[in-house]
Image 1 (cartoon, rainbow, N blue to C red):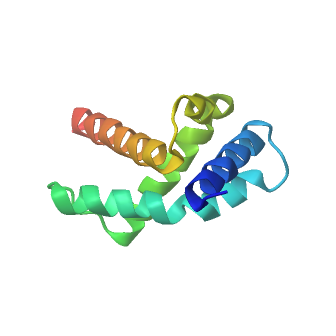
Image 2 (cartoon, helix red, strand yellow; image 1 turned 30 degrees about the vertical axis):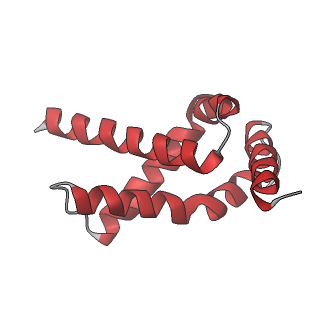
Length: 108
């Protein structure tokens, strides 16, 4: 089995484990995907007027994972529609960050 096919299989299994609320699945999910989420947040930070501190970056990453876990992992349940989990994760992170930024602008 090729690495990309194995990665896809691993991603599907891990997402399903989170949805099924298996022990330690969520922590494994966060550990495995935190780097990608932070990288996307940094890219957004670098390409926009946002200038996030380290603490703000950590809060943004926490928001991304909390949003993915909300409503009985509703966002993760949608993953089955996508072939590449990393692409899905990047898109969801960008959408969550965009929504958060627009909500912050409305508050000011």
